[in-house]
Image 1 (cartoon, rainbow, N blue to C red):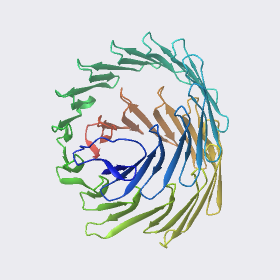
Image 2 (cartoon, rainbow, N blue to C red):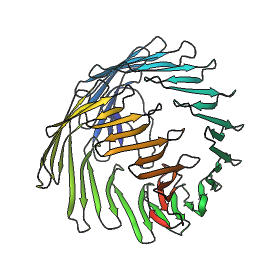
Image 3 (cartoon, helix red, strand yellow):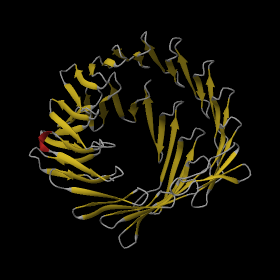
Image 4 (spheres, rainbow, N blue to C red):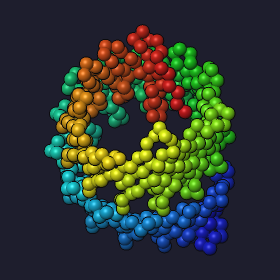
Length: 489
């Protein structure tokens, strides 16, 4: 990637290993990538970016006040968002391209956020204790959350809008070591001498975590005898994962450290190829089915083709965008979609001209309120209306109604096909669903992972990979037999 300034003289070049020479001065900076696409950034005399132009010539303009606060942002079509500040530099108002205004106020003491009022004047308020710690949050519907704090400023308790209290204890390093709930549930956390979490404990048992000398997680032991263990290369990348059944996944990387392939006992699970800019160009799964990806000069997805192992096209998608980056058309194997938007960028119409006799044409239009909540949809001439409360939750959609608790959790859904009831714990995690004669009860560990579900009396246990996103990797029945295995890469 080459970067130039002013009249185009190079100011530094980034080489493969990242070496570069210093950048000097301000003005125009050009960045040309490995495909020859050039984008430009323009800076004022204070070094602030006032124009950002992509390789297609689509530019976003920004304006700053004398204190350096962003006061205006204009997109490539000329639609403007403005920002207003008080004398202390706090953001007090934003207005979008449709002149929908959000307002903010602040406390005199500690200059904390005191309130937020949206474009429909729904107001959320915040109050603080004498040390500036958040004490209470009042929602637009009157619901109140509250906190207490210890001498170190750590939250000592949290009371949700339903009045359920969670209490917290900490060690000398400020780490949570215990959470106690009003229903008697308790979660305990223990750490090793290096500060790594080494054990959690709750009513369902203990989970232990083991680390190597580099503090990389190498093993997790879950209740019920289930476990995962990991190996790493010298760069700290995971190269293998194994479970208690001996199932092993191997991870392979290319020369620049990108994940290139995952393999299991039966062979390759998935392989990845990248374009010169490091974007995914092809994904091939173990069956031989593969997907190819192409991008426009601005880096937006342009085409996606799904292929059979012999190269035949299974499905295809090609995208067109306007100057604001919104998708205006999509050509598919079953027909062509076109899209229209309002000034705020909200989808107001989607039309399908189908080429598949089994898929009918579609014409969908949408209307929104001042906050962007959908209030009306017309699908092929059939209208469906929406009702919204002051927490921006739908209370009615067509002939279905929705009821929420004081914390905003959906607790009941009513429709022509009957009702569904939902329950939640103090941390607002779904714990139960009842629909007709069917019931689902959900269980969580001390880290908040869903570790099990009881469906009409039959229990399924879940195992999660604790690294990264905490992906679900396995489901087991009550006897410990594997039901489903998931691999992520």
